[in-house]
Image (cartoon, rainbow over all chains, first blue to last red; front, side):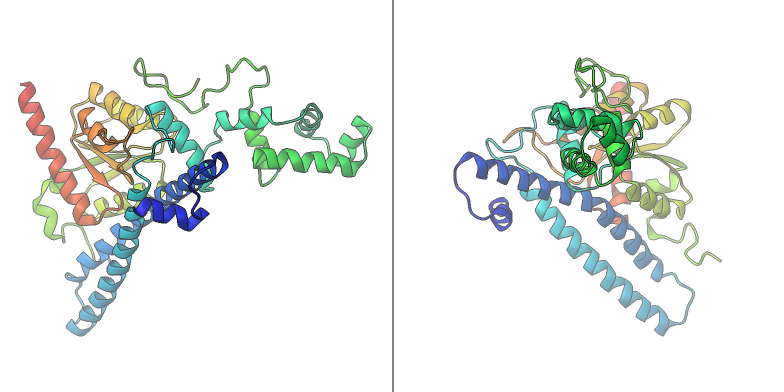
Length: 222
Length: 151
């Protein structure tokens, strides 16, 4: 019930149709991602405040000061606990996938899901090679040419000259490429492009930081 | 002067007192930092790895009393990490997660699965210092119980 409430809040009450289902999936993944991302800082907050609260009892200060500090710590702890309870509720609401919603069949899916949701929450620590390759496949042949020139370090003017097009046209290609890769700046674009497997044989889709497979069905990439 | 000083806590009678080195595997740096801060004041050193393979490498190359492993790690899932760690070491493992995700409706969730794969106990995020200490305590009890079964 909580799940429905969360989803309806975000996307409006859609009952059927493919697009609403996709949108509700996307919304629910974003909610799950935000909940997951928040659980870190909130845990840290709860640990710090909780520990300060414990320590208050043992501070070598006068009784009045100790009591007022203790009150402050207790209030901070109370608020932290409230925020934690809320985020647990949200996490709970997204915990059981509805039929046709987020499918989490095995470890491979968890990692794919993790990559998507981390990116959705805007706190991606690593570039997901699968997403990078998917974005690359969205490029038109012209955009691929432009990307090639950008990664060679050419400016908009130089690139435009090379392709015999106007600099504004080159710029608009560049903007579309950035959008397709969801890159905020040139550095972000480069990080994505480095993960792209341009030979098309999929041999570079395994994450660079991935460890050796440690048992038969463990590894995610591929 | 550190007014909080080590060993000024009511929980020092528990397993945490026996701890000297803990490994935290979590890609969220603030979790590692917070656990480090909490345990440091209880005389315990904490090492943090943000990736499964870095954590496994640390476990292979030096001694730890306890490992705390997040279930959602980039590259290699926490479940696989726990399975792997369990093969090379008998130390208590605390599985951490912000979720109780179910692989499919009605099935076991990942925290239970983690325990089945060798974790000694689990801890749901967010957790308080008391819950952290209690989970550490539980993991020691469970780990020694399962070692007793093996012997």
